Structure formats: structure tokens, C-alpha cells
Length: 291
Image (tube, rainbow, N blue to C red; front, side, top):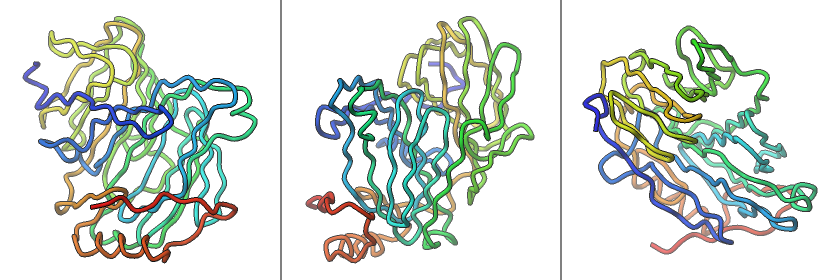
């Protein structure tokens, strides 16, 4: 492993039901977060035949912001604030859970009838201590609204946060960056040390860092203070992410993130007692897991 890579995290497969398998990289036993990113799932690529689709029933969140970023396919987001929004490739749906929100993730009827290839990254960002109980909110930013620029042969799109003088439209509550990097085969990009904690997720393809090769779904947690050059060994798509260290340790159970174990216990009780909001038009829900 390259000395510039502090830790290599390789994915663990998780079955979300109906044969939809994701590759989970965060949280990891030896590395719970990178900057404010506490959860990272690599979804797909999954081919849904005509008539098949995604049906993640309503479920709750607290203490975090979610962002699903797609390379292909579409997911329909519904939440307890009343938002109904398709997520398409390159779009940013930034959902701040704060004191509590409920949402579902499904496939629209028209998309289900046609079938689709679904591929993307789902991330959770822990909210700063002072904003853990902020009122829930939702932002949608279409792909065309994101900052995009070239660095040599590399193309960068800033999904969230700030990097290199660029600022994404999503309103984040802590210093962070989240970049979609497109590298043709043989092209290189040097990631600077602007943010204290940084990681590289190989979403498509494979890269080389200082003579060591890394493959699809690998997460490279980078050593602090170094500029790191990433070279594509094949056409590659990378997600670059990180930010300032978390301001306090976080507890994480099911879909709940908090600095307080007691707050998570309260969220469990609230979901069990039906005290969260409702997703308009939906009566199904995911029961509280045991434990």
C-alpha cells in the first residue's frame, strides 16, 4: 500500500432486500468516519428488468444529512415534509434530518415498466453538534447547477461543500468537500491538502497511487498534509470526499446518528410509538429492527 494512503477500506456486501445488494465502506470498524462522512454505500450497478424496481419503504433519520448521487438510473424521493422529487444522474438531493424526518426511496411506475440500470453512491453526513436538532429540510440541485471544471484531462463536478475556490449550491453545515472526478485512462489528478481529512472512493474503474493499484469500490483514506496524485489505469470515476474532523464522537444505530446514546434511544421509542411524521400517500413503513 502506498505510504500516502493511511488506510485501505474494502467493501462489505449488504443485501437491502429483493436482491438489491450494496457495497458498504463506511462505517468501518477501524475508521468510523472521514471528516463528517459517517456512512458510504456503493449501490449497484444493478440491472432491474422491466416490472422490477426499488421499494425502500418509509423509514426515519435523525442527526444527519443524506445525499444520493447517481451515475445511472433514477430514484423517486418522498419525505414527511411533503417533497416528491426524482433523483437523476448528477443531481443532488440534500436531505437534512436534524430533529427527525421520514422518507421513502422508490422507482417511478414509468421507469419500473421500462427497467433500468441503477448505479450510484449514498452518503450520510453527520451534523455539527450545534445543529444536530435543527429543523428538517430538503434541497434539490439539478446537475446543471453544480460547479464543473477541467484540470488537464480530468473533469471535476463539485457535489457539495467547497474545493479550490469553487462552492457547491447545497447548504452544508460544516466544512467539507464531495467531488465527482472523471478520469480518462492514463489521466492524472492531484488532490490538494485543503481539507484535513480526505478519502477517495473508486466508484468505476481503477487507479494507481505512487505505484500501488486500487480497484472498484476501494476507499482510500489519505494521510493528512500530503498532496496526492491519482492516475487512472482505466477509464475511472472517483468520488473524493472529506472535510474537517468531527467535533465529537458519534453514535450510530440503524438510521440514527447522534452524539448522545440517550437521543438514539428516544428516536427508537418515537419510531416504535409512531411519533415521527408521515410520508404523504404512503402507509407502509420499515419496522424498528430488534436490538
